[in-house]
Amino acid sequence: MKNVITLVVLCLCSATVYAQTATISGQITRLNDSPVSGIVVHLLNWNEGLIAVDTTDTQGAYAFSDLTTGQEYTVVPQDNQEVSYLQDVSTLDVVIAARIILGIQPPETPFVYAAGDVNNSGSLTTLDLVLMRRLILGIDNSFQNSPSVRYLRTNASFINPDTPFSGINYGNSTLLLDTDTPAFDFYQIKIGNLNP
Image 1 (cartoon, rainbow, N blue to C red):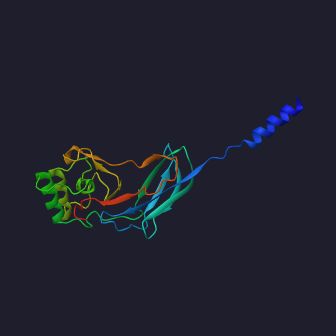
Image 2 (tube, rainbow, N blue to C red):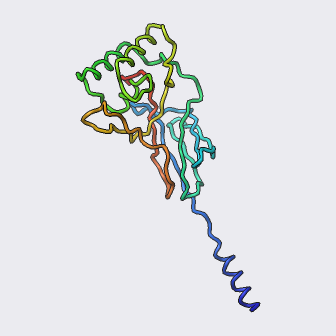
Image 3 (cartoon, rainbow, N blue to C red):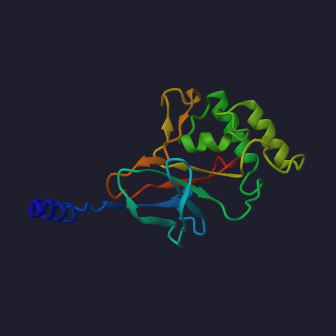
């Protein structure tokens, strides 16, 4: 009996399972593909608890390594400095937004459409034009319901490409980690700048 117990203990000890780990990495760029450095990137667990923080390097790259596989993680880029709402917003952006709304010019990408949604309503409307004009004229100094910058996954797409006004699938910044996940990339979208 003593030999059986010893054998069971040895089997249990030798069968210790080591958790597999993997890496999540990516890059943050502007719509013109220029890298954005100095962006703080948070990694959250399934219940939104902070696991790790990284800052993008000069190539806009970030990485989180030694993460336990089989877990759900969320990647959240966040500016570590205030970006002026008026920065890169001009009358040209108002004209482009008006042309999109009137159907004269389709939005080049979902990201341009998202940049024009300055009131964060999920759609591009004449109210967005009014708010952009108020900002340019100095009547307002911000967009009330929107940050000055948003971060969207590069895999964002129109829900219906033939009808951009049907909305945008913004991509998912949450993933169930099974293996190394490179190219978990984001675009930095300057709100109000439809002509990046």
